[in-house]
Image (cartoon, rainbow, N blue to C red; front, side):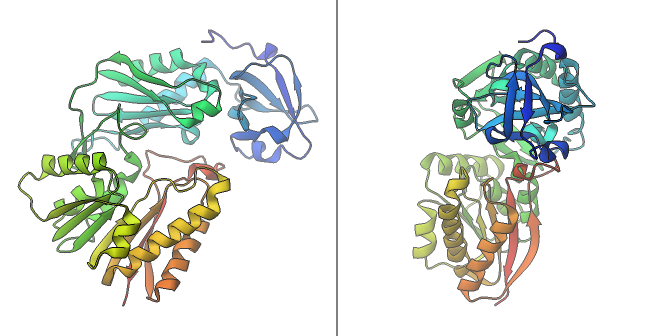
Length: 399
């Protein structure tokens, strides 16, 4: 870890002519093709000064030649990056989530990488503990300051690291997983909008729970009282638990993973132990929707990421169109479809085009009721459209 930052000795990275505009407007990523010259010695993850070709300082970031995103900006020229600024941003991010947490919701995302101007850092509050992801070589250099600040401002009972992602491999880092502080309770439970959910932070996906859908799960309650519901790609059953709590007449959970189905069953039992109007199906969702003879009043379609990078967009688009077409065909009149994409490479404009193409092919009149995204604990830097990874639509089939 760096004990102090001497800006006069930092390597200087000069951008090619014409490549400075995105940085000036606040975009935090600089790709290798934009770099014209490097002055000074660099090592993966080192802090650097970024200049345009005229010599004007644009700001400060960290550099890694192993990554396609060579520089991730930390601050602009008016605000040189420092350890004090790092600590302040952690404090600010935690403080800005205070309005989310109450007697009904005890967990949320605390730090959202570029959205909180801390690229490469993810922190989730999970009950009285924290789960952290240090995803880049640059943010790894500040590990000790980050953990110390989290202890100071959050007073957690435990801190668990889940830095076991592909992004670390691309950065030239080894995976890291395990307890950094305290011990994780054996049966970890969180509260979300008055409901309880089991969280497996060591074996679950990402940090163990998808907080980004919290407000969308709550919105679902408006549409399902007395309705039949099919929760596709149900994972841990977040949408299903909310549907049953709101009075859905029947819920069908569908997921290809037996572990996911088992987790969903556990969460439903945790909240409604005597409920019987639910069925669990371990199946490929595409196959299920094509083969089932059942029609539903509401279908939730929240698939895993179909496109991990830009090269997979065409294939992913076909997948999204197919799954939405299958879902639209299985809705009753006035049926509601909650449909999502978490593929960063597919923006909202393209997602709407894909879903609308599926609606056209279904031959049914469709209304758009809501355009959805992640909740306010997942803020996005206005200059960083790539941060808007979750997008969703709520549609009604009119006939």
